[in-house]
Length: 130
Image (cartoon, rainbow, N blue to C red; front, side, top):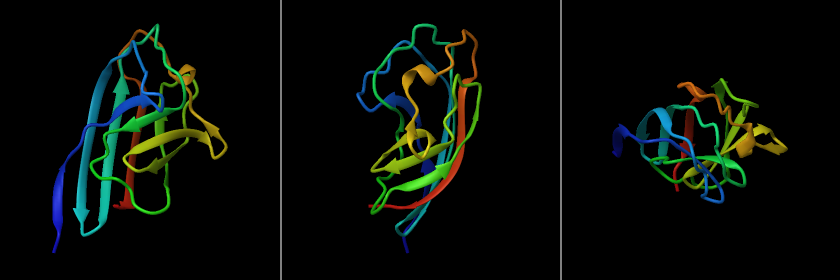
């Protein structure tokens, strides 16, 4: 019997690993792993980022376990984005944020407002670990 509970820290980045000029406002991640199945919860938001920069697709990193097999899709709850992602696709230990199945979320889609609690993302995802 393999059972584990814990926390993880979700962090925004880009697939080019060059996201700059913003700060995380709130990050909450919990997980429960039973055998090779893990369920994660996530809540994340940024502070204002008037000069946010980076290239490539926006991703969410920090998952507690790498996903095994095929990619896993999840519907996202979002708020206060410039153009919000609707789906996430987890591969290995990062999630690519997607506006649709054909359109990735890019850095210019972030809301660069000067206030806290922007670019909010929340979800629950169950997946098979590698």
